[in-house]
Length: 227
Image 1 (spheres, rainbow, N blue to C red):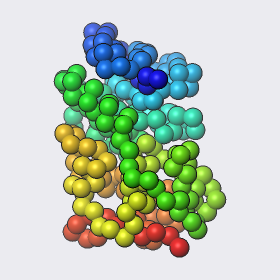
Image 2: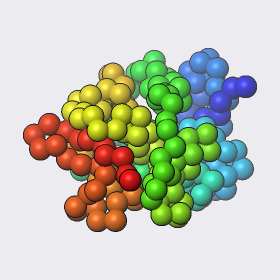
Image 3: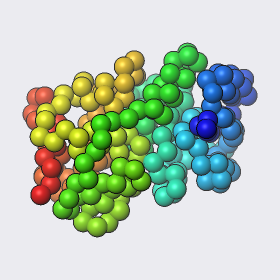
Image 4: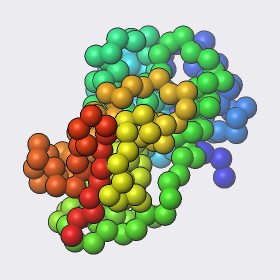
């Protein structure tokens, strides 16, 4: 069964180009061209991935992303931003509010399709179900902290899966970038720090003094399995 991509883009020519290339790659493509109606369309379609323009005629794609992440049914859908805004502040903001990737215009359709494929197929090693205060149901993609379900983005979930699959091991930011985002990505080590901080805010009782997801100064991060 083909996966469904929702494209939110107001440039008709670019939207047509995206639809053509994604369809050729075997995906079912649905499109919208403004903020209004996008959330309802997303909930009706239940897409496997969303390509989201930042500058839309009736609003801001960042606001759309925030609204999507607030909807339980859509909270884990990968969101790839499409934008002409290449400054670091915009990229970091896009990731901080729940985006999984940030693609600046102009871009190669071939590269975009490759990155879509990478986000949709990326799998990690089987994840043990943690016991105690942190529990993860990999099949249902649910995470519980002290019995309370928390909402993670697709990237945050993959990051947690990877750490849980490799407890006690230290990973550099570059290794995490390669494993979670893949080769050829346009993200930086700072993006790892952004996602780690957001993950800590969800799972740690004291994010500024983490018990589980620990910083190894001058190198990267290590995850200690909760007891």
